[in-house]
Length: 517
Image (cartoon, helix red, strand yellow):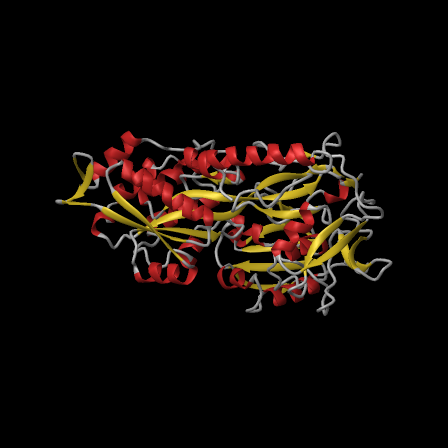
């Protein structure tokens, strides 16, 4: 749930009573998310709860869908897939690409990527990875029911096998960050249902016949793993995952922090990491009083994002006033300010936009401006963000109300233009292509990317302008108001030791070095 001071006081009272009554058998809720480096190490001095006799390292399998590297959507199953199926490249938490199954180089002004399969790239059955396997895998990933289908529709024009070890991909445009897209799982040609991948583990069965993951000799990884076998606990829903994790049946899991951390209790460490899920405020540019970009700039400056994050969300989001993730290496080097909050600057922009103050009321012509802020009531963080923005606007003289809809009615309100501001959320692709947001999420704001801003974005991706210049170009255009990126976390039992360095594409990164007590 969303954390605030009142809830925190309630929590502390409940915890104190709980501790006094059950100190011998229970441990308090953990709220220690990592610092700016995003890395925590297992601490053997904390949490000495015992594992049941014979208990193996266990993670969840969602039994409600088939494990399929191209169609599985369950977060639990995607985590299994990341352990058993590698892509041509891997991504770290800063969205920096590095070779995994293949080295790569750009050709023809950046529109073609040539992948050279690495020596030692093998499948779990011992056979070598070839370009023919890459071709087969891409054909599976391009199918309409694949979760990767949109990447092929938008960014990947064609691909071909050049030789046994060389695979070539032609892109629809030149962008060096398109390389981030190629975490697409590579499987052995002809395999289906019993998909054969090249990763750290392979699907197997333990001595009881239960499904598990088994480490095998893969030259691209360490020779020995601290955790050789992973037992899979088949669960039917997310609540089962929470319950089994909190009571020691599971030992590691992806933790969704979008609703706070109260689901994760007991002898658990949470190690947070950035995600590409972007939350923003879109204004209805068809309204006369929003036709000036100065009006949108004023709203952006009057939102105290730092206070919003600290008061409402704790450490479960990364605030932004420009559209790209602050952890992305291309943005991080720019050392941009974390926030731009200023009521003085906001007032100046509102004045430039033609808004007048009459007493404490903000007027457009002779009428006070009344703003309808629309959000989806099934997303608690978006609701709280909408309420905070409404409060910020009221402090600047606007009349503002928050209207909460269920998902279907929310989409109808946005599509019909029945809003002044709506709170949107979209998972950007790993190449951080901002145009994807316009294609998928800003449905009816009356704004599109102008040629000038489109060229600024292209120049930014090509490295011709830096993060500060890009931010200035964005502020000039102001197509929407960035708010924050959500964070995910690796929830891991204190019985597990090691360096935990999760990322969005690999929550169990570094598992080869983990050990169980």
